[in-house]
Image (cartoon, rainbow, N blue to C red; front, side):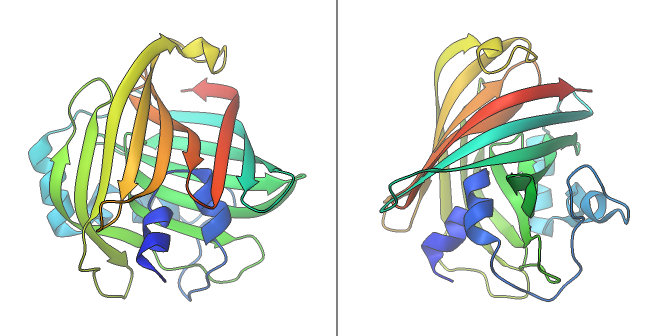
Amino acid sequence: MSMATTKKMLVAAGMVLLAGMRVGYAQEAPPPEPAQDPNGYFAQHFAFDALNPDVKSAIAKANLAPVPFNRIVLHTREVVTTSGQAQPSTFTASIVLENAGHGLVRRAEAVQDNGNLMGTRLDLTYRGYFSFLTQSMAARSNTSPPMQESRKILRFDTGSSGHFAMVYLYGATGQATFADPGQYLCDSGKQYSASQLNPGIEGAALEVTCRTIDSNGIDVDKVTLAYLEKYDVAIALRVHNDEHTMDSAILDFNAQ
């Protein structure tokens, strides 16, 4: 797996699920749908205590407040445009966000094509911006790929009002840590009513643009998110790289 591909797998966006769930790796499989966790896999393996000790220490030192919700369920329509293809592909996604404490949010996404489940992606994120842990699984596979994990945080600037910067060392479960650190940098933009995204979303939204940068200083992915101020969480609306562009529309939104 190339470094660029691995970095793309760490971006919190549905396009990464569509691109990355074809890899097979023998280990315990996650639940087939985000709303179901019969064996407690999601809650156990995507939690603060499941993080690398160095990452746990950095998060604890940051003393981050938990998000103000217990659970959010939303559905989205994903339109993926691929270089060299005349017509875009359209998918739907069912997404569950859960409060994991310490400013962390568990995220489960099930992607469907014409009602058929294509795959599931599980993440442990910082407020939806960045995934510390990521795992994806194709619907017809009996095995799941290795978990992508952050192993050491070199820079962690949480900022305020949607600003964020993360420089980190990372790798896949059972594999060596990549020598070059990953970089994920975000800048805030305009503020607007979150109801423009969906009438069920309350409060204001802040436009946030994030970039995944490789060791040569080149942007690998550019992500546009909506930081929802009432819920203290970011939702990806657009992901762009040289091969794909994914645009996401929120069909419904239910906070609990």
